Image 1 (cartoon, rainbow, N blue to C red):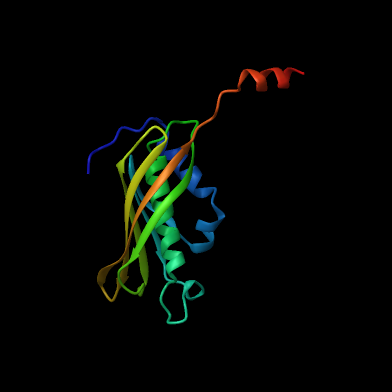
Image 2: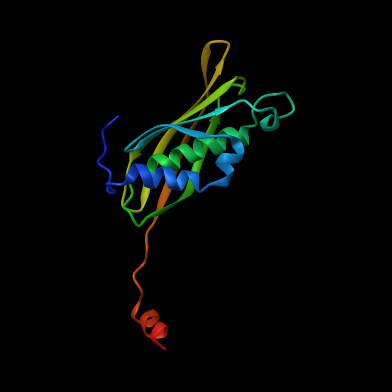
Length: 158
């Protein structure tokens, strides 16, 4: 993994604030464990309310963790005024999500001015073993403030 230089010197506080502003992450019990520019590790404990009919953590929950990990990793490299939005992802489920704890690790592969490409892996910790249960590739978009057009500037003065 190549070390990235964040565009925002306050990337850590901004990334944590963006993550904390998501009620979905609190609902799922997902927390940030590790954060460096372009990389993040999130974790979640098993909760029966998050399982599917066979008792495994639901694929949608794992996908949410992977997507959010990609988002935080990408956001950590964006400029201060940016916001972030996922524009595409592909998840591959490799094993049943059986475990006491789940970890979602993501890293930026290619940062860009507007689009950033990330890869992520989800792991289940069960009976002292760690199992790779899913992978994801994702493209995320920096939502940057747009300068007012001359038409918008005139309209705001009216």
